[in-house]
Length: 574
Image 1 (cartoon, rainbow, N blue to C red):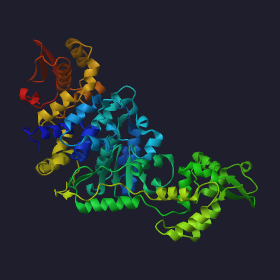
Image 2 (image 1 turned 30 degrees about the horizontal axis):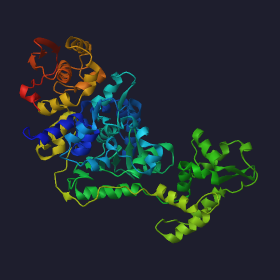
Image 3 (image 1 turned 135 degrees about the vertical axis):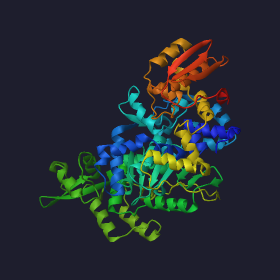
Image 4 (image 1 turned 90 degrees about the vertical axis):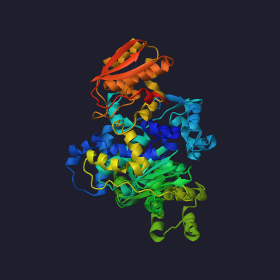
């Protein structure tokens, strides 16, 4: 629990307010805290009133998650603008967390500190892909995770037509929405992080993985499309650094783990099963869809007007883009029928394997990759001058079987009571129930700081975050004098992005979204003054619904609708 006399406690609890990528990695409890903060959000519960959900009361869990996916796609964009929440420096962050992590360990685990990923990422130049290449020096982005309210508020930001967020934000949102809207039990929701990504595993049916705005069923994982390839790359090429669950967490770096061993074993078994499939004709077809370089070694036959016809496999795969039919499925004949006859050849194409022969092979043989005898049979059928058969079989095996790199179980297992939110039906009930669990669960206690409720959390962590990790508003006002900065803030819409009278936005949320309650604007103003005039004295006081920021013998007044008590001078001492 928060200890105002412990600097490390202050660091952790202030991190629950800013939720940067680095902070979530260092303090794994934060991952579940944001999930719980979203569950307490009235905004999330209001989704239930949307006709998209209110008119669909029944349906299977899978059906409910599919509808949730469409709602999220319709209302949110993936935001990869790493400048959104400003910049910091490597040395500053390393100094902050020197008591928690070794620099070399960090470089192997965090994208901002040199992590490059496995060979796949080198091949696609992952740092350039994610826009990290311009941060190859001392300067790095904060890369903060957003609450649901901040995600929705992107619609107020220039260039955005709806809400937005980054991968951890979407993971926390999906997990909370799966519980509140999708009615998936907490016990079946696992959050997981890798150095470059965050996803969830939902233990329903054969399993579902969330991936940014989308979801991936087991069938989709193996369908060979570009979308599934993108969803696969983190688990195929990175190790899982954190798994968070209602019973606790496990972290690749720390010796202690709080997740129930039984829950972690269940997760390990279920996700390993999800990531594994038997090789069949359909799987071979899906594999070729993804590994296009092999398509030129295959051809597909088709009976047209009672006569056999032949066509290049890559040409058929190209036609899939404008069709609902797919190679390797019962709809393959429909796909071939859609192709004009003059695309076909009357004779088999030289130096190409007939897909029909592969289909016959799989009907007569079951290939088990752990059995050399069956693999050799497959190699004989696939052996061809067009490619290296050992390489093809190795790649096919990798396609059909991803082995997740999970945190090992050689941990000191620390028991904590699992979080129980069964039978809640409103955000108020969620708050009430979680309030009772705060003293026995750190993630729950941190959730109220991520929730930004200053009637239920201390001022000092919030203010430390506000005055030390909100550089965007400082950058925006750095060339202004106090009077001009005050005028700019005063002209902004006087609405908080957070509902209620006790939840408070951070300064950069005010600046990025161009709105804020008077108290929030006052903190934004003080953050600017502290950064540009660090030696000058400044104070804040409240007079009814008027917030007064005092500086340089002048008073700058803001109107507030918030009813929290004003922080003391001591709250600003970090």
